Each structure stands twice: as structure tokens, then as C-alpha cells.
Length: 475
Image 1 (cartoon, rainbow, N blue to C red):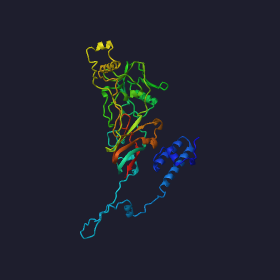
Image 2 (image 1 turned 30 degrees about the vertical axis):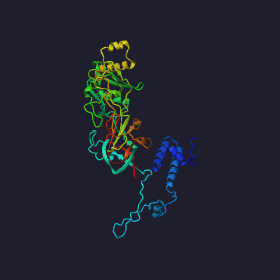
Image 3 (image 1 turned 45 degrees about the horizontal axis):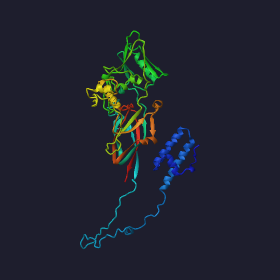
Image 4 (image 1 turned 90 degrees about the vertical axis):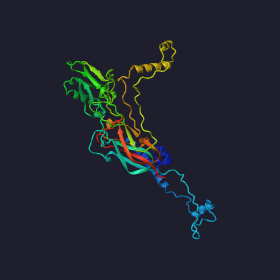
């Protein structure tokens, strides 16, 4: 059992436990309170009391540190200091007389020194809350609107003139976004030529199946569709129960309706458009049907009384992380933003190497004069070029990037948390920080919150906030 007797620990021991090198009232209190809250959650009252006593012991030490008397106080006169440091030796015998016969004014040498001590750092807590943004009306769900609350610009109440670093301290996010929404293009599919469009919302696999069946029942052309979910296999199935119909086509993705956008997070989809094959409702249901080699459409064919099962489990969770971007309009920051992976599919044939570019290549292949690496290169290039850069099988999406990215916010346990807000503070968030090359003036900011595909998050105008700890150098 852990020793919880605070008298057995020195201040150095406690700082080692807190993992604090340079203790201040702020960081000692913050770390201790975080540990106390954690012990309370885990039901450990003895450890709660221990960390509270440890916090108080360090705070008392810091308070008394400033009250200790200063030894060898300076009581010498200025003249004696000059004499002791030989500052009067170079005074000329005949000081300059600037007024002829009048009073002589002697320029006494004064030694100036440049401070070589440690920098004096001031800590400021900055709170950014969307409820205080300038434009709040009229409400619009269009991300291009100036009132959209996950993309706005603001000024600080007072500028921070010599900022050297910025750290994330906390954030509070309402869990009001929808995993399935028209803006993302993942709420519809076509069955027998009829669009089945489910309402925007958050679904479990069971409720998602129920929503599709409810939409199918509204039209005689789609009433034969039965969507089911098997909780044992974790798969979704489509069944055509209408024996009077011929083979029915289910279309998950229409290539001609695909929209390409730059990663600015300011677009909105409409008219049943999608961003790519892996953003559709069919993809989230778990179907990985190959695209049509000619059109690029993704289609599923259901004969009468036939059932088609999804290839993989459904994904109803929604985005797995958000990205917080903070543009401070400074060119002094050391961080360079968010890097991601991009689409490596090229729309031109690859050039074959010299050893392949010959009329005798067939002979070389038969003779075995090419190395294994050369054979691999030839096969890979041939296979790539034989695809003729068609519309099928490749990913059209690139990962979101932003030079002003400040933090990536993993979304954990959101389904169980709703409708309560998602709140994090202290501790781990300090990993999200920005340093500046030199003291920098900070006053105007633009902030945005985007999902894992680079789209602005639609919180349906529920306010969100985050706080920063900004360090300012005073000397």
C-alpha cells in the first residue's frame, strides 16, 4: 500500500511525483487538482487527501521562499561603489568647461550593465468562447455564412505584446454534431431509381436500419426493400422481397455527382452529391462493392428474393477526431501546421526504365538477365499503365491540412456521453503548444474547428470554447 503520510516526503519528493521542474503556484495547483480529480473518479479518498496535503506543502514552501531575508544588503554609497570598482580612475584632470568661466560640468563615467539573469515570464489565461463572437445572427447551417460558429475571427481585449509560447489548457465541445448529415453527403442511396434519404442525425446500427426501412415503406417502388442488422455477425443486409420486380439496382455512389473541393472546410454539398466512394451511406453501412469499370458508379444488384450482405461492420460513430486551428497572423511561430497523407494516384502513365525500353525486352525476360528488383518495377509499371487511369478503385480524398493547426482532438466515448458536453482540461493537453522564434505581438485571431475530412464541424449553433495559457516575456 502506498505511503500517504505527507511528513515522509520532502518538497523535492513531491515535485518529482508531480513531474514539475520549475514550480509555480499555477502549475503546482493545476497538476495537484488534476490528480485529486482522478483519485476521486477512481474512488481513492486516501490518495485524494495525500495529493491535497502535498499541494499545500509545496504552496507553503513557495510562499515562504519569498519572505526569507536577503543577506548582505547593499548599504554602500554610490561613490564608494564607484571607488571600489575603479570607476573614477579615468576622470580627466581638467574636466570640460562648457560655459567658459561659469560652473564646470563634469561628465562622471557610469558603468551600464546588461541583465544576464533568467527571463521574467508572465503567464496569461486566454478564454475563447464562441458565444462572444461578433456575428451571431441570422442563424445559418451553411459553413460559408459569417455566423457559422466553428469559424470566426476575434480580437483580444488587450494585446499580448511579447508572447513566446502558447499552450492548450482546456476545451468544452457540445456533442450536438450529427454523424450522418447532408453536408457530408452520407444520408442517401438510390433503390430502384428512387432516392432514399434518411434524416440528419446520430444512429446506432439498429436505428439506422429502422430509418432506412421507414423511408423505403413510403414508396411502392421501394417497399420491397428490407434492411436488416445481425448483431451477432455485426453485418447489415439488403433483401429484395418484391417477387414482381426484376433485378433491382441499388446505387451507393454516382461518379458524375462527385464534387472535388479544396481543403478549406467551407463547402456545402447539395443535390445528393458526394465527396468520394468512401463517404457514402453505402460505405458506412459496410458495403465495399467494386465500382463499374465504365461509369465509376458503385452499384449493387438484387434479384427477386435475393439478399446481399455487407462486407464489413457498419460505421456509425462519425468523425474520430476534430482539428482545432488557430491563425494568429504571425510569421514567428516555429510549428508548421498539420501534415497528412495525400492521394498517390496519378493521372498519367509512368515512364518505363531504360532497361525495359528496348525491342529485346522479351528476350531479357526469357533469359533471366534482369534482377528481381527490375522485374518488380516492370510488373508494377505495367499494371499501373494497364489500368488506363480509369475511374474505379482509387481514393479521391486527401487528408486535411492547415498551416494554422494547433491541436488534434480525439473523440472518445461520444456516443455514451451525449447529450452532455465533451470536456477536457490540464495535463495531457499541454502537448498541444506553439512556440515563437522571438517575442511576438498577439491581438487578432481566427479559429476554426474541422472534422477528420477537413469539413467545418456543424454544432448546430451550440456554443463551444477553449482556453489557452500564453507566456509573455517581460524583460
